[in-house]
Image 1 (cartoon, one colour):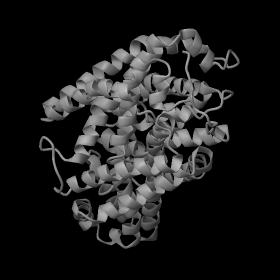
Image 2: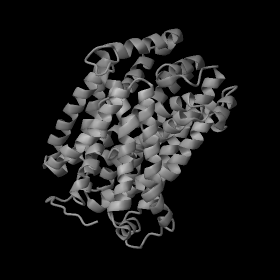
Image 3: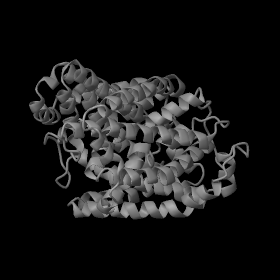
Image 4: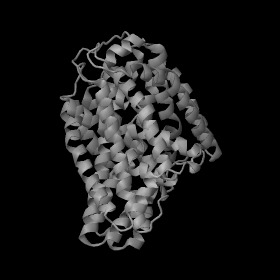
Length: 477
C-alpha cells in the first residue's frame, strides 16, 4: 500500500470531526434521499423495497464507504491519485469515479435549480390552483430559458462554497445546512403523521410484501443505496483524503451511513402518510416531489400548507446543495492534485464544463438540443451513472482493496495502528474481497440487461465502451 506523494503544499484538512461528519453526511444526503428515494420506493412496492435497501446500506454501503475513506486517507489523494500512486494500472478506476461525478453534475444542478425555483413558485401562489400544478411543472421544465436561469444560480452557489476550500467552505456549509435539513424533515414528518388516515402510508412504507420483489426491485434498491451514499463516484475517497490520521474511520462511517439513511426514511415518512391521507398515488414517479408534493400541501390549505411547502423545498434545496458540492470537489481535487491547478482555476474550469453539460440536459427535457440514440442528454447521464458507472466504480474499489492492497496495511489504516477497536474487521474484509464485488457485478449485469430490455441497449453499449476506453485514456493522466 505504498504511495508516493509529490504534493509540495500542505493538504487542506477538515477542521473537526463534527465538521467532517456533517460534510460527508451532506455529500451522502441529497436528491437521492428526498427526490429519488420516495418515488423509487413508491414504484417498487414500498416496504419490501425499503427492507432490501436497508440491507444493502448496512452490508454493502457501509463496507464500501469505509473502504473509500480508508484508501483516501491513506493516500492523501483524490480519486485518480489514490489509485495511481498505489498502482498505475488501476488509474482507470479513479477515472471512472471522476467521470461519474462529472456526468451526475451534468444533470444534478438542473434538478437542484428546480428545487430553488419552486421556493419562489410556492411563495408566488402556486398552491392556489392545485389542479394546474402538474401542467405548471411540465411547462416549466420544457421551457428552454427558465430552468437554465435557476440551474445557473444553483451552480453558482456550488462554486462559491467549493472555492472557499474544505474547512472554510464545504465544512462550514455542512455544519449549518445539515442540522437545518433534519429540523425541516422532522417538522414536516410530524405534520404528515398527524393527518387522518396517515397510518396507511406508514404501513405502505414499513410493511414489506416480498411477493412483489423481482430483479427490478433489487436493482433499484442497490442503485438507490449507491446513489444516496455517494459511492462509486469518488466523493468519499476524496473527502477521506482530507481526514486527519487520528479520526476513527469506523465510527465516522457508521455515523454518516446512519444520518443518510435517516434522512431517506424521514423523507418517506414526510410524504407517504400525507399522500395516503389525501388519497394520492404512491407510485407517482420522478414527478412526485414537484407535482404530488405541492398538490399535497395545497390540500392542507391556508398558511399551514404554504409554510410546510416552503419548508419542504428549502430542505430539498439544502439536501441537493450539500451533495453536489462534493461532486464538484471530486473533479476540483483531481485538477489540483494531478494537474497542479490553483483551487480557483480548478473550480472555474470544472464548473464551466458542468454548466455546458447541464445546458444540454435541461434543454433535452423540452425536446431541444441534440439526442443520441433517440435519447436526450438528461436521460443519458442518468442511465449511464445509475445503471453502470456507480456500480462498476464501487465494485472496482472493493476489488482494489481486497486483491491489490495489503490486508495488514488496511487493518492498520482502519484501526489507526491498533488504537481503534474493530472486531468485525475479518467480516468486513471478507465482504469487501469476495462477496460485495460478486453481488455488485450481478446487479450491474441486471441493470445493463434492463437497459437493453427497455430499448436503451445502445446507451448501455456506450457506457461499456466508455469504461473500456477509460483504461486507455488513464495512461495519459
